Image (cartoon, rainbow, N blue to C red; front, side, top):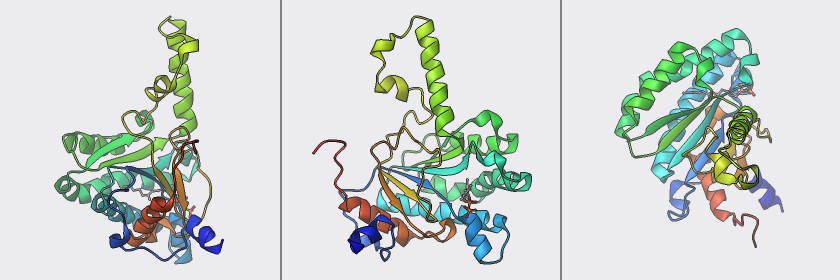
Amino acid sequence: MLQRLKALFGKTSAAPLQTLESDNIPQHIAIIMDGNGRWAKRRGLPRMAGHHSGMKAVKRITMAADRVGVKYLTLYAFSTENWKRPKAEVEFLMKLPQEFLAMEIKDLMEKNVRIRIMGYKEDLPSHTLKAVEDAVALTSGNTGLVLTFALNYGSRKEMIEAMKSIGRDIRDGKLDPDEIDVPDVESRLLSTGLPDPDLLIRTSGELRLSNFMLWQLAYSEMWFTDVYWPEFSDQHFYEAVREYQRRARRYGGL
Ligand code: FPP
């Protein structure tokens, strides 16, 4: 029982890469990167230092995901609710994508990583949008790991927009309400083109989804850890994958 609880909350000792089964790697891992502020506070640093350190973890975990053979990595970088934070923090967070990309784009290109953005672009500051759109364009021909930044993303808004689109198509006689099926909804979500996540990781000890990929996570395995995002290491990442490999996925069947 204790072992199971430890595994559920990711408190087991970190796993080395060699312990992973190469034929059962999650295709898509989504991460709620949480705990930057608390990490900084614990060190007597400003919250921004936590976000900056969190940016370094983004590079580390992208490389670890690529090494393991994950095909899609989706990172929750800014939610539709994060605008409620103090202006200075929002401005700082909005500068991180361009700082990250300026620093790392060369390595990402070398690793054949393709960058995508999932979120409501129209509300992003122009400097943020330009940096990510340039990176999306530059990496569009890459065929390796697909790294998606959920930026100004919110699942409820995503579902409301999908419902509106369905409503318009019904009104215009293009869709029969009795015929609506899963693809009709999925083709209207921001995640179109991405498979559903196999594994969701959330750092920092919080046990909630915070409006992240609510539709897409329907059958995902979840793994929570107390570790704050800035100190989330390759070994923690491997441990999450290792725990995923111990799970039996049944999708409602037996
Ligand atoms: C949640 O931690 C984290 C965020 C809202 C921002 C996440 C952003 C990064 C990790 C950097 C993103 C980097 C790129 C390249 C886009 P929190 O601030 O809520 O932490 P707390 O709960 O401890 O206060």
